[in-house]
Length: 301
Image 1 (cartoon, one colour):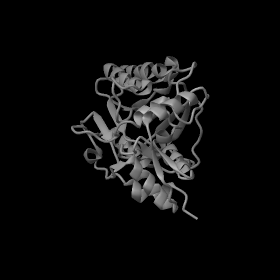
Image 2 (cartoon, one colour):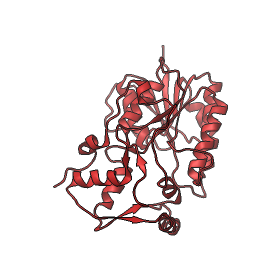
Image 3 (cartoon, one colour):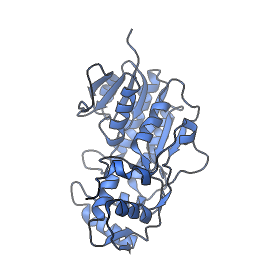
Image 4 (cartoon, helix red, strand yellow):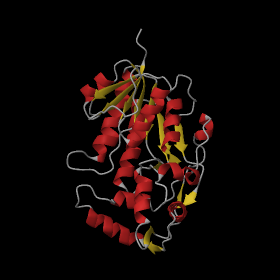
């Protein structure tokens, strides 16, 4: 008898790839769904993993990808919109269709990966789309689980890599005064939380915010990185109006290194709020950024 499969859309992304590994290592039959799926380097013969080529924006391909599934995770994301695909296409329309089909197929476990700070009244088009996507998913599948991590870090991530690049400058420009509070969360901890939330005996909560063990100012995060790398650089506050102007200028590039949405996100705190499910409800003790840097960044020379 064929065992039910956990299906992960966006299985080649930063979180999705780690989730695939955690699912396979737990012995769960897993299907990696992406437009260009690839076998992970760690896969061994006999691992319960299959690849499936599909675009989440294609309803017929969603139907095929869900065959035999008993749990679904939507880990897809779009950070820069284009003429070919908008935030609405990816985060709202496609997410809602995936949830609708999962509900219609009788799949009871559905996890929508979102992010802390998601709200409908945000100045960011990206954040507003994520918020509408959450609502659309819940309309289609009322008992779907929404997972909102704080800023995610880990080996070969974009967050620490970008901050490390900043520490090579003679002077580090801060977003504002650098007092925004962050709760960086390790990608492995996020993946293990989703493994728990897609298990047969999952918690009854349906809304989770996941933050790491450290709540730090943006300035403190940079100081930790510089200390680890053995560097010292002065940090200079830069008004957000300047950052918005820079992001506007960079917006003409096909893959801008800084977007207006990212600047808007940096204007507020990114911490777990009260009254939501957390790692504690899942029996997971999240690791701290300061303790994880040696495994995530090159050792200083």
